Length: 151
Image (cartoon, rainbow, N blue to C red):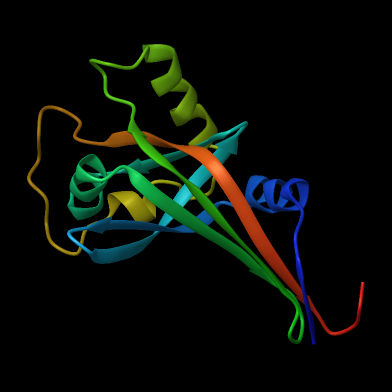
């Protein structure tokens, strides 16, 4: 097996073509990682969540990363890590157009709300929608690719 570094355009292409990532955040030295649906546009990775641990932690420490990968036959795979900063798209501080834009990009993904919206315990019914849209402003991308033969 051969492993090589991926170029930035290759990394960007892999992330742009995907829809499920692992989002990592950290608080008080304790890492936390969860699956999340995303949509990449330019240098912004749009995501959705209900209130909970990851949102609280990202509000405290906005430095996050996403890991996106794809597997092929045998031992062939590609993996990209996106480093960036959490930016909440709150109704009060974000132009409504960006909030709606995030929604429109994510709704193109199959079952886009499930990783961020489903909780293991029953939730209270609220007259207000508690969902949260956020962006990871991309600061860098690195990746590796593995192949059975040199390419």
